[in-house]
Amino acid sequence: MKNIFAEYKHRIKEGDFILPETIPSHLKRKKEPRIPDLTEGEVVRHFDRLSRKNYSVDYGFYPLGSCTMKYNPRLNEELASLPEFTSLHPLQPDETVQGILKLAKELENLLCLISGLEAVTLQPAAGAHGELTGMLIVRKYHTEKGNPRKYVLIPDSAHGTNPASVTLVGYSAIEIKSNSEGLVDIEDLRKKVNEDVAAFMITNPNTLGLFESNIKLISDILHEKDILLYMDGANLNALLGITRPGDAGVDILHFNLHKTFSTPHGSGGPGSGPVGVKKSLEKYLPVPRIIEEEGNLKLSYDFPHSIGKIHAFYGHPLVWIRAFAYILRIGRENLKKISEFAILNANYLRKKLEKYFENPYSKRPSMHEFVLSAENIKRKYGIRALDIAKRLLDYGFHAPTMYFPLIVKEALMIEPTETESIETLDRFTEVIEKIMKEIEENPEVLKNAPHNTPVRRLNEAKANRELDIRYSF
Image (cartoon, one colour):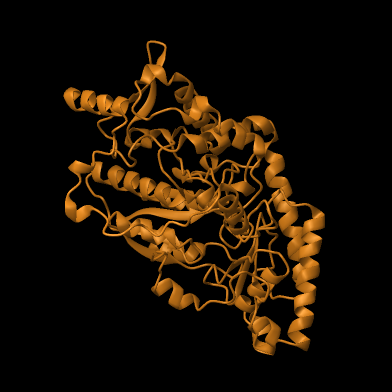
């Protein structure tokens, strides 16, 4: 191996690094690639024009329910871009990366304090990956006790990733109904709790934006049968500093750093879905884990009860840095304000919009998000929630989440987050008012919307079934 590297170094010095004689003839091009001959300025302008066709949280209001699309502070982006972080390599010896290991350990500790749980892993790469990790822990826990069990209970309002994660680890999902208030039906839960159930996956606040006020009772019912309570932390943005899941009896929780702690989603960077557990489950967390030994931090694999590795390396450090900076800048003692303003914004906007849409679960105040139904519009005018969402695009607003949760017909799920001003919420309301008038006067405008976007209305079913993202030369 050393001789090969020496040969390459020699060739680099000689300016001959391509080694054309080593490429098999059948892999060589038969004709020149179709690469346009453009100036740097033309290339920059092309990609800048493309970027302006994208919608983002930097461009406007992004009210995706259950996704918490909020402003990403530029300070956090700058910190994550420091060369001291970006030049790190995951295979460096532990003693050369003490800084990032210390940051990770302190972030783990902060997440423990915020959640009321005793141990955290930062490894999972996103929320659904965190769910999978949590379910692997559930299975390991019950297997070591002599019976992995068969079922996991899931509310009918759950995120779609919940039953998927359950199935991936070999369990079958059993649905728990919602009651008339949109909360877990306690009687239905009692009927389905038995020694074959391994866990109950709950989102709190749930996907209707309602706080599960019976969470402690639910925990007690489950723990009587040694059933673990798993909490989907997608909506943790509503609980910061107000209540801690661990204090209510939650055994396992995944966080979404790319939601609650304001790091980019999707193409803005990878996500991160840390998992917190109570003390009795700590030994099952994935390896490696950060430990302190002789005054230094290191990544240790010495955990015989661990579920093993769930990531190529330890996780996504540049996401941790952003989340860590976000928490430090606000101050742990001030995190409560995030949730208070998120809840205030949601209830303000909900009251503004209830005059136009049905609210099937209006008996309780909303937390950080709310779900309304356009079923009344569909019955009267034949206009669907999809048509309203598409028309919103013409007015410069991103559409809210639609047709979820499934228990609400023609659902519009809206989460304004704490970072939106009252002026933005009022403008959104004004646009909804204009759309309502269009529905009465010229509904065809909505049925053919959007009209002003780079791409018009697509056949979404066809696009999903025949995904083609390859450009052919």
